[in-house]
Amino acid sequence: MGLGIAGLRGDGAAAGICGDTVMAEVLAVVRQELAQEPVASRIAAFDLGKANTGWAMNRNGQTQTGHISFSHVGCHGELFCEFDTFLREHYDDLFPWEFAIYLYSHLKGSAAVSVIVGMQAILQAFCYSFDVKVDTVNDKTLKKWATGNGNASKGEMMDAYRERRGCDPLSHDEADAWWLLQYAQHKLAGTGPG
Image (tube, rainbow, N blue to C red; front, side, top):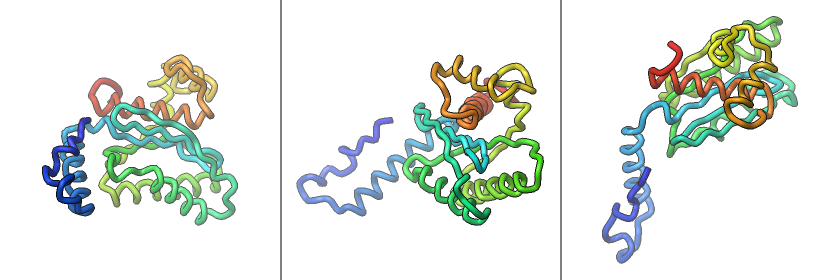
């Protein structure tokens, strides 16, 4: 993506640059070029959890993955605030997400349900505030798509990740987030799952 910043103002170098004007012009060019970019190039994927939240993000063909732990957090309110901060730190105004996806799992235990539902609400509200489309995938659907087996174990999902990506995941949460990203890219491109 060539921004063509040098061509924005012919008088910029000689006359001195008004920072706000140039920045506004740069952002206008970037937004125009981003509007021509396929949606599938700016996706964020999340495997939500308190112990580890796996994440994967794709911007302009570059994929970043990782995980973050919220297990040090005491109360749910603090966890939700920290998750919101994490989202804000990973959202880029210059290259905004166009699509976010998260893994939906059937959970056992009221504490786990409370945490995950709260994190889902934070993610959905965050995406709504930035006009990002959100979708969810059932864990069995993702497992079947990634491995061919809807009941695949965490180990099998990690093995499939290693085979496909060519490196070890940091955790099963990171592997699941990466698979979510792949799933979303194929779904949005119309070349994969429905």
